[in-house]
Length: 71
View 1 (cartoon, rainbow, N blue to C red):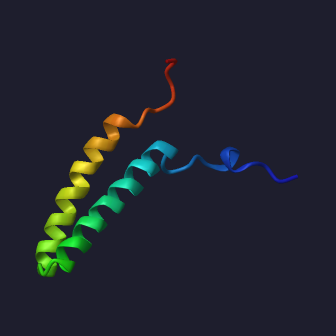
View 2 (spheres, one colour):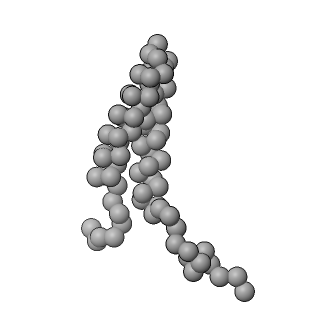
């Protein structure tokens, strides 16, 4: 009989960490895309996207609950 995945090895990231990273990549990609669309160069787009993603990580880390506590 085949055992579940949790019995074999744990996941690399939690659902919360995956959500925070995915949302921050979305924000950074959008900022970079808008920078290129407005006529900025690729270097400016990478800097703007990186700054936006870094700020988004800090924001989403604070506002997304880990689900462990009672309300």
